[in-house]
Image 1 (cartoon, rainbow, N blue to C red):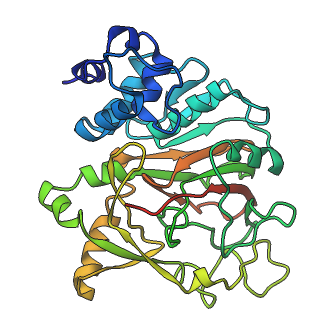
Image 2 (image 1 turned 120 degrees about the vertical axis):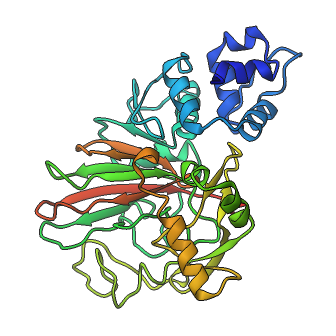
Image 3 (image 1 turned 90 degrees about the vertical axis):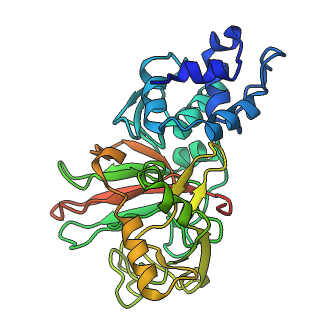
Length: 357
C-alpha cells in the first residue's frame, strides 16, 4: 500500500520540506493558506504541489486523513483526532471565543479541508464571537429565506420547541445548494440540546463518488442537475418555522430564492483539493437536465443512496457549547429528529461560496 510519505517523495519534495510539517501540511491541503515562507528552490511551489497531490493521486481520501492524523505530526498548534476513517475530527487546544493567531487559523483551515467536518467541544460563544470566528475564513452568507437573529441577521437560530413533531434539516443536504453560489461552509454552535438524541450525521461526497463504478462516474461527470428551495420551503407544507405566524421561533420570508432554480454539476470538483464529489441532495435537487422524468428520478435515487452509508459517514453527539464546522462543497449532513420531548437551540453561520464547477 502506498503511503502518504511515498506520494510526497514521488513529487520530489526535499527532505528539508518534510521536516517542517507546518509547511508541507499546509501546502498539501490548502492553496488559500499556502505558507509565506517559500520551500527550497528544487521543490514545487506550495500551491502547485497541493494541486498535483490532490488531482494526480488516486489514494482514497480516508487513507490520507488517517495517516495525517496518526502517522505524521502535521499540526503544531492544535490537536486533531479523527472521528472515523472516512471523515471528521475533533479539534482541541483552542478557545474559539478568543482572538486566534494566523498560525492557528491556518491549521484549523487545513484540518477543515483535510477532514471535511471538524468539531470543537465545550466552546462558549456569543453571536458576536461566532461571527468573528467565521469572518476569519470569509464573508458570512445570510440565509435568503429564514430570518436570522434580529440583533445579528447573519446568525441563523435553529429552534425546535419541546413537543414539536419535526425538525429543521431532516433530510440529507448541502446547505443552500439551491443558490447560484452555494454556501462554502457552515459553523454550527449548540446552545441548548437534549440529554440524548438529535445528533447530526455527515457523509462524504468524495467517498460517495468513489464508490460508484468507473462507467457510472464517467456517465455522470458531465451532467447537470436542477436545485431549488421551492420544495423544502414550500409555504403550504413547510415545518420547523412559519411564514405567517409572528409567534413562531423561526420566521420565513417569501424571497425570490424561494421560487428560483439553479443548475449545478452533478459531480463537483472541489476548488481547493481538486477532488470530485457528488453534488446532488434529496432536499434541494429535483431533476437532472437532459434526462426524461423516469430516468432522472431513478438516477437521483441512486446518487442519493450513496450518502449515509456507514463507511463514508460519521455521527456527532452534541453537548451544549459544542461547535461543528463543515465543508458544504464535499459532504452532506442531516439532522436526526429522534427526540421531540426536549427543546433544541442551535446557531449557524454560513460562509459565502462560489459557483460549482
